Structures are given as structure tokens and as C-alpha cells.
Length: 183
Image 1 (cartoon, helix red, strand yellow):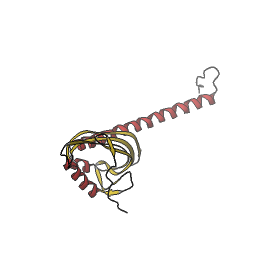
Image 2: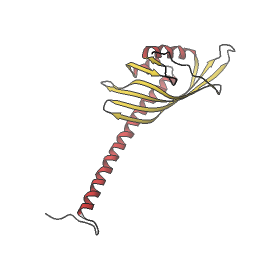
Image 3: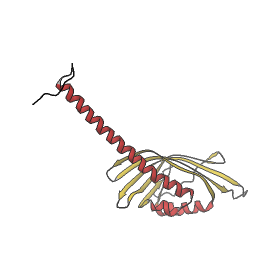
Image 4: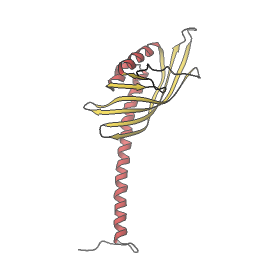
């Protein structure tokens, strides 16, 4: 058997270490590509949700969730799917128009059929002030940590935990509405 070519100054051990390093680098590249693909795949889901928010389409939004979906606000209050859906319908009915709705995936970590996604969102809408009847602009900027479960029909959102949130009305910061406590 012919010995492999060894560049000057390199031992067989060094060459084996270099080959192992190249394999590891290739594997890391594959993992990084998988992570980028997962992030890209989830970004498509978040774009779909943002578009549904912009068109105030509750059916599309909740078609993307699991039956046991929960939402946890920044202050720790938790709501179940039916409560969130009812609140969202009520809030959408008050909106004159949605001017901005974007969601951006910051990271996506997949482990089997479960994924954790950190995303940021910007939502801006016009509503009529009940006292003055003049339009006001409400804007919310948030960061969430979301859990997705993969089933027969693809990825479904199981939970949202709000990490950060700032809400303004005509540019002035206000306290966001809190969820109903379920303790």
C-alpha cells in the first residue's frame, strides 16, 4: 500500500488531525446551514402571521397555533387560546387600519419536533379616540420567545412568552394592556 503524500514538515498524525478538522468544519457548516434553513423557514411563518395581522385575519393566525396555545405577557399574566382569540377579535374590531405589521426571526433552534424561536415584532395601527373621535396611532414593539411543535400538518405555534414590549400612543409610551391572570 502506498503511503499518502505528506507535505514537507507534516507528520501522519498532523495530517490526520487536519483531516479531522476539515470534517468537523464541514459538519459545522452543515449544522450552520441547517440553522439558517430553519431560521428562513420560520421567517416565512412569521411573515404569514404579520400579513394576517395586517389584514386582521384571526382565522389565519389561529390556524397556525396548537389547540393548547398559550400567551404570556411581559408582566407574567397568561391567557389560553380561546381568551387570546376573543381579545384579538375585540381589539381588531376597534382598529380603523393597520399601518405596519412586521415580525423578524432573530434565532431559531430546532430539536426534533420542537423549536424555540426568538422574534421581534412591530405593530402599528390607527384607532379612534373614544373621547375626541380623532384618530390616534398605537404602536407596539416587542420581542418574544416562542415554542413551535411540528406535527402532521407542519409547524404550529404552541406558546408565546413576551420578553420585551414597548407600547406608544401618538409617540407617548403607555402601559400595554395586560392579559387575564390564570393562576
